[in-house]
Length: 213
Image (cartoon, rainbow, N blue to C red; front, side, top):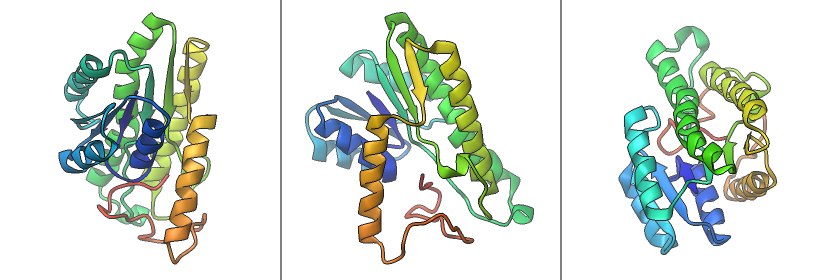
């Protein structure tokens, strides 16, 4: 199993839960430090690999490293994401492009690389972490909303192509149980309720580019 964006946020929560359930988890992310710290905490059956999901060659190399360590990647969780905030008329194109590169092209690269082996094996699972923003719009995060709409459309199209051997999805019993648990922990630890109303700046996290899903 491989989880992108595994160093922080939802990706970290998913990695912890899946490891606790007995999966061998490859932790993929841009920054080595949080990945190494998480792997050290999880212990055996976890492995940290640095990689940027926008770099096709780098991701192919990271996947090859993961296969050498734990065998075929039968389950892929695309969790890497970002969400810069700005009024649309002031949104810098470089921020728009980077959001599309990470949130959409990253899913494209990782899924396409993993899918070939899954189809050859006759089994696989791809879980794309989408968002309520894949179903509706929110102010000040137009790039994020557009990217998540794209992820949902891509997921639905690919699912029709490769079912029943591989099941790309943004919704599964496993993913939902983890995300619900993660959301409950966020609500308990935050003084402000987690809801659907978003204001300018509300999506900033520790690194200000990581996206809540």
